[in-house]
Image 1 (cartoon, rainbow, N blue to C red):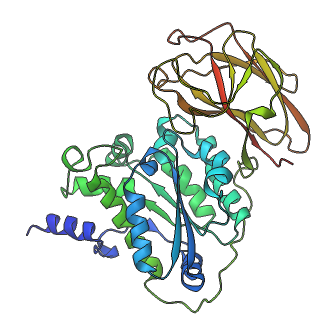
Image 2 (image 1 turned 30 degrees about the horizontal axis):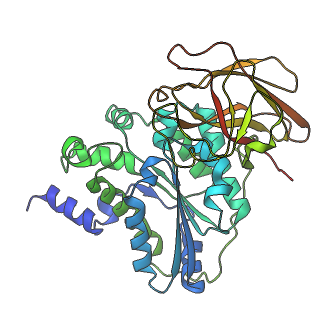
Length: 395
């Protein structure tokens, strides 16, 4: 049997030795979660990411792996994937989607694909990823967190020309600062394709991987488990992880989603208890048949009182998404086009952060109004607010 085929078969079976392909960094490791699983025989594991996390595949294989390793443990596995979203929405929905049932022991986080495709800036990528980590470790100082970098063609192109993708640099900066395990699946897939072990077109297929690709992902995560848990340690108690100084003082470590009824001074905007799609285009779960704050005409407006360093709107931006104007604390009006490159066929969940460096000690007011302008590709002026987003403590 050719060596490359043997490597593939070994990888799919979860037996590829770490020395043959080490695409992860353990750093502080995963000792805490192992101790919780073994000693309490209970464990809560969450998977936070975009559509690659939402779809059936790697996370189910990882869940089976954990259940096999800890057969006496009663696990709760939380799918906190949301298609089209990266680290910024992840930071604001962490409490709602990851910690919704209480303390989490092990968190897998992936946003390298959507942070790239959604055009988030370097500063925003760090601010959001650090916010996820710090907020999670505020809610559970013992939580183990694994940051993963999934593959896509632009990342492969970067690696093949000798460059490290910027989004991976940014997420790795956070992983290194907080000594988190990280798994570089983008590099692994690129190098193994280059070695001729498999192909993108016939085997991996797409950035939304084929079953073959999901097995590659889960197998590498399994090898990370092997390296983290193969040797017994003298540690008998979980360790509280220290929180170092922030990389970004305004990171989203208090990210929260507020229901749209928090808005005030409604003019034209209406609270819709269960918005249904009569416009056309696809929808995402959680962004249809739910309560929304909806405005559709130029001049429709509302306001929000809040405290925090950041404020924004989580909207369903579909074929008729309009242009809004916003101002904070009576400042200048600033335009924001809600229509995205995906809006023509999808009411895409999109989180717009209007400001991220406000004084957290002072009260603030956000004003939003629909502009008379609109994107030339849009069918209308609609603004459908599913959540108000702030980074701050709320009573």
